[in-house]
Image (cartoon, rainbow, N blue to C red):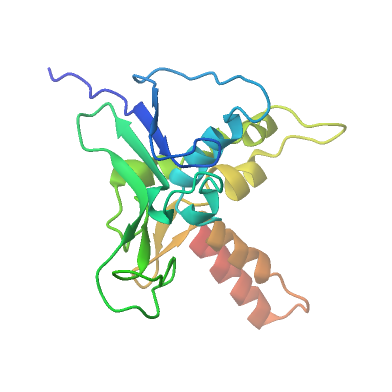
Length: 220
């Protein structure tokens, strides 16, 4: 009888020149796979830890790493970094900025050209172009746990609001989960539901009904 694999957990979180944690020295948070309770005064770095985890474990980043760099450290842009070591014995997953060799010029999306050896490119562990880390992408699909409001909505609503698990699942908890659809294309559950919403007919007729039915069939 084979033993069940250990649940994947964070062993260490490392922030370097990230918001409230100026470089060049990295700041380590040794979790050893345990739960973490963060408390402290305003400006101590609580939100910095949240933003680091939230943007690290996501497949749809809202901000680039350079926007989180500590503006007072005086360190180069490339010092800003986030690293997560898991309890699986594998190498750390890293989110950072790297100066690459090459001519100065137009850089790809998510990077920009600077003076020096070449453009600075951002490498995120959940990005396909950077060689996605399955540990990070799988955790990113469950990142709603980082938002207490999403979890609170599954049991409680302020005022007279009623709990609607269908909306919560589609718009928050499962919205980024990829699923295969017709034609060998992969789309997220959120995108499929958006297609249903957009197919709602303004005028009733056989064509609009067919479009709605097709969108519903793909989503279901």
